[in-house]
Amino acid sequence: MQSKDLLQLAEQFGNPLYVYDAEKIQSQYDRLTNAFSKVKNLRINYAMKALSNIAILQLLKEKGSGLDTVSIQEVMLGLHAGYEPSRIFYTPNGVSLEEIEEVNALGVQINIDNLSILEQFGTKHPNVPVCIRINPHVMAGGNANISVGHIDSKFGISVHQLPHLVRIVENTKMNIVGIHMHTGSDILDIEVFLYAAEILFDAAKNFKNLEFLDFGSGFKVPYKKDDIETDIEELGKKLSKRFNAFCEEYGKELTLIFEPGKFLVSEAGFFLAKVNVVKQTTSTVFAGIDSGFNHLIRPMFYGSEHYIENISNPKGKERFYSVVGYICETDTFANNRRIAEINEGDILCFRNAGAYCFSMASNYNSRYKPAEVLWMHGKGHLIRAQETFEDLLKNQIPLPEIVAVQ
Ligand SMILES: *Cc1c(COP(=O)(O)O)cnc(C)c1O
Picture 1 (cartoon, helix red, strand yellow):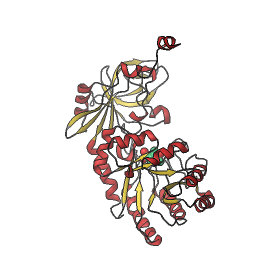
Picture 2 (cartoon, rainbow, N blue to C red):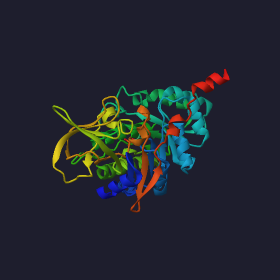
Picture 3 (cartoon, protein in one colour):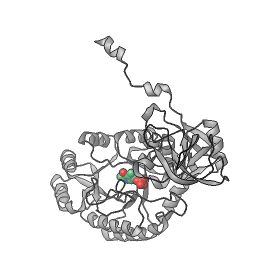
C-alpha cells in the first residue's frame, strides 16, 4: 500500500482508522504454503485472536485456511463467518469443562492443555477425537509475556508428565488424534523451533491413532527496517524433510498443522491517527495523537516498537519526537523517535497494525473503537464502522430503571 492511498482512506473514512491490505494477507498465506509444499497434507489454521473481523476470516477462508480459536465466542464468530466446524480448532487455556463440552458439541476439534480436564473429559467422552497440547519447555519467544513454552509457563501439559498423560489415556480409552505445541510468539532461531519439534515427535510415538501434528506458531515478522524475522523458507525446507521422515517411521501420512496469527496479518495492517498537538517541553517534543492505548496497546503492554511514519510530510526534515496518546495515564507509543517533521493535523501511520491491535482495543476513557477498512482491488471497503454513542450505552441499565422495578 502507498502513503497516498492511506491518506485518501483517512480522508474518506475519518481517523483514527485501521486499514488492512488484503493482498499482503493473501501473499503471506501463499508464502507459508509454498515453504511447506513438500508436505502432502498441510493445514493452516489462522489464529483469529490476532485480528477477528469476520471479513478477514472470510478472506482467509477463501484461501483455504482453517481457524485456530481460544474461546467459544471465537468459535461462534468463525461459524458465523462460514467456516465448517471441522475446519475450526479450539485451543483454550484454563477454561471450564463446560465450555469445552459446548464447543465439542458444535463439532469443533478440541485441544486439551491440562491433565485434570483431560481426565474428566476422557472419562465422560471416551470416543471424542481429542488433541493434546504438550509443553516442550523450550524457551522461544520475544519476551516473557509472549513466550509460553518455558518451564514455569501455564500453557500445555509438561512433556515431563508424559507418563501420567499416557496413563490417563489408557485408563479412559480416549481417542487422541493429534499432538500440539505452541512455544510462543517471535521465534528468532529456527534451530530452537526444530529442537522443540523433536520433542513433539518423541511424544507422538506414544499414541497410535494420530492424524495430525500441530506445531503452533510464533513466527516473527519484521517490525522495523532491518529487523530480524523467522526464515520461513529455511524452516519449511528443514521441518518438511524431518516431518516426512517421521511420517514414514510412524507408518502413516499425518497432517502438519500451523496456526499463525501475526505472520498472516501483522504487516498487512496500518493504523492512522491525526496529530492533535505538538508540544515542546524543556527536553522533549511531544506529538499528541487523536488516539491512545484504548486503540493500540502493544507498545505500552509489552514494549512493542511499531514503526511510525508521518505520511502527511514524508520528505520533511527528521526530528526526534515522543509520540503520545490522549488517555489520562501515560500512554507513550514511541519515545525519542526520529520522524519527519510533524505539524498539527498531520496523519501518522503505525506499521504492523494488523495483529493484536484492533483485537485488543477497548472503550477506556469512554472512547469509541475505530473503524476498520479492507484495502482490496485498489479500493477501501469498510468492514467495521466506528462505534457510536449507542454502543457505549448498550447493555447499561440506568438507575431510574432499577428504582422503578423495586
Ligand atoms: C496466539 C496463538 C497463536 C498465534 O500466535 P502468533 O504469534 O500470532 O502467530 C497460535 N496458537 C495458539 C494456541 C495461540 O494461543
